[in-house]
Structures are given as C-alpha cells and as structure tokens.
Length: 286
Image (cartoon, rainbow, N blue to C red; front, top):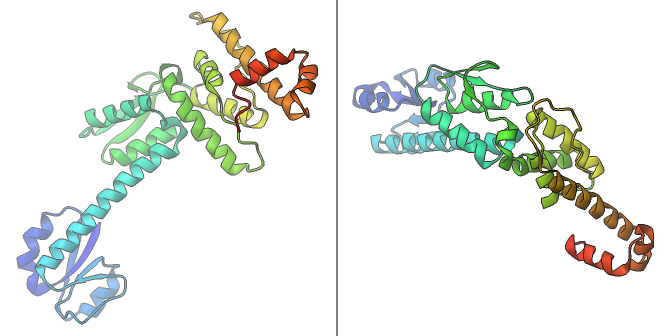
C-alpha cells in the first residue's frame, strides 16, 4: 500500500485521482501537519514549500509531481510482486521445470476470480510450496488440499522432464549447506535412470535420493515390489546401471593410479578398452 499525506485544501481536487488508485491510502493535514507526519511512515508527502525535505520520504510540490510519484510506486509494487512470484518459482524444488510451470500458469488463468480452489495431491508432493505460491498469485482465493478430489497436482511420474530441474535445485541447496561435499553433477545416463523410475514417493523421495547421491555419488533407486507394475525397458535400465558403475570405478582407478597402465591392472581391463571408455565417458576432459 502506498501511503500519501496531502494538505486538506487539495482534498477535493485530488479525491478522484486518489480513489482511482487502489493501492493508495491517503490522509490529509492542515495545522496538525507535525502530528500527522509522526502518525505514519508516509511514502509520499505533498508539501508546497519546495525547499523543505523529509529524510526517507518523497516530497512533491505539485499535483503533476504527485501523479508521477504514485505511478512510480505502483510500478515498484508490480515489480516486487513479479519478483516474489519468480523468486518462489526458482526457490522451491517442487516447482522446478517447464511441465509444472505450465500447470501453475493454467491454474492461475482458470481461477483468477475463484473464491476457493481445491488441489488434489499424492503422498510425497510438497504441498506447502503450492500453498505459498498460489497464496501469492491468487491472493483473494482460498487454497485447500485434498487427496480425493480437486485440481490434480501432477505427480512426479507424470512430469519426468522436470526431474533434472528439481534435482539441480536440490543439489544446489545441499552443496550450499554442506560445502565439504564434492560437487557432483549427474550425467545423461544417471538422469535417464531417474526418469525410468515411477516415483511413488514423488518429490520427497527424489530429495532422499539426491542427498544420497551428493554424499556417495551413486543413484540408488529403491527396489520395491510394485503391484501396479506397468512394464519397463529392462535392457535399457541394465545398460544405464552398467554405465553408471563402470564410469564410477574407472574414475576411481584413475584417481588412485599414476598412469593408465596401472589403472588397467586395478580394473583387470586392457589398455585399449580403458582408453575407449575414458573417451566415451569424457574422463580425459579437464
């Protein structure tokens, strides 16, 4: 809200202008200017003496200056609202990725004037982040959650293209908090491995796996019996797992060897094969 203090003599001239600006809260003064000045932390003060200034306040001397000052504050409020919205989008792991962004924008577009919306969610979805986001973007709408009905929040298995974005946000937070950890970045094979999984635990499960990856360098997919198993590309999954393990141990052997020949002995692998694998996994790049 923009707080404006004006002289009572100009009230009638400015009434229509001030009422047309919903973000403006105004009051007027006459001989009680000093008292009024102390009552509020005014953003704009209309004072006809151009030689007078008030620290931390914008002082205007004409109606035109007042209009410009109010417009400036309104633009600042719009900017702050947009910044807050996108700060949330880029801060919350749950809200990362192009697929969930489309969902969020669609919900906003269809519920601009709704008094209430109900969001349906599954276990493992971080509903607190949706609540904060929609409370800001739909400030006059009541946000409720249900497991049985409502606008369905896409589970992670339905938005797998968002996984790299979510994982990046989680890992960035982990590495910022634990600076002693080696900063590992998942490669394409590891990302593909994550996309193969069905994610019954949604984002919270991904957070657990991300923490394990940050500390061990391994993507550990839970091995659970799934009564709703819909099939899997097993050869592709095995290939991903093989490459992941192979790359890890080649890196480990190279790190603990003085030469490639010595690494070959540790891996029980011939030199030509090792050289090919190093090139394949780009382990010779600095």
